[in-house]
Length: 383
Figure 1 (cartoon, rainbow, N blue to C red):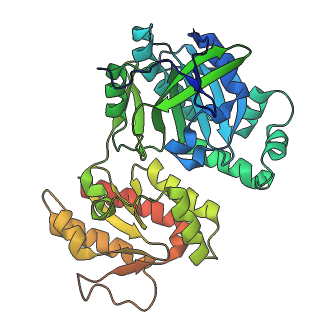
Figure 2 (cartoon, rainbow, N blue to C red):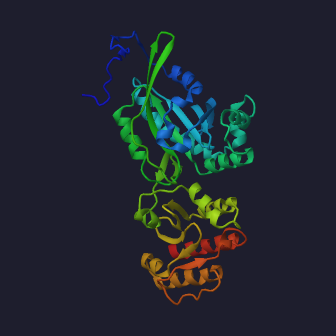
Figure 3 (cartoon, rainbow, N blue to C red):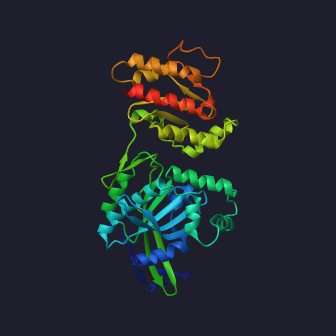
């Protein structure tokens, strides 16, 4: 028996009298595409992640470049009160091929939205009615000021923090299996979820029954690349995520930055994000989990940990993880390179098992010098 068998609904009044309503099943992608923009609250996004709750409709059929050097069109785009995008594609059960295809399409759209540099202005142009922020402020009274909101939009797009939602009248198990495979802990902040919406006409009203068909997991920092017109997602090596092994209590990068800035009031929030982006741009891994951020070389070694008030490393831990020839020389190079960045009052390196702390100015005034040093360290360790 199907796990999703649905019997005909029955009305029961307060006296226990039952009547069977005359209902008509609606099976139309166009109906969904017309209905969802007017009633975004029907989408169970808060069950996936509260950060995507409180949606504002932006547009339909938004054009975006694809990995095949053509153009595709996102069925519906919403933006949440927190400044995160929700991309919706609608597909019906009777189109099994398109249901499989849409998984690749929606990943493609998300990757290219990020790669083509969408920002608030792009969304505002797509919205087209008036100013997007002004209309959102009318709908959500507790929306932050415009500059803060726009900064959040840019940050979430830069980190590909999207919710990709495939909506259909029935989601086939084979599609669920593919989505479950995609929803493995890889390396970018998008989320993928499947939602069934069964719709019935009852006179001049509609009965709409939404249901998520799978548990959605965080997809943390996915590296999305296009190879031979295919989307390829590469997972980080376990050695680059020591914090994640200690507990499953996940903390987002945004939450971490907020806590870090609260304890380091001399460091602007933007400087922390710029610091992380500079490291990612030179091929370093930046991994948030639990209360720390791990920094290292993907699939090679974890080098630093950043807590909510300190940046530190342990020489003995690094020594154990170094592989290949010239391990001692590589460790010595790393330790010597770190001396100029250490906080004052430390005596390097009397105790190899000790936690050595770096000056937080590597995120601000000394960031360029630190990043350049990381480039050299990466070359030496990977040699």
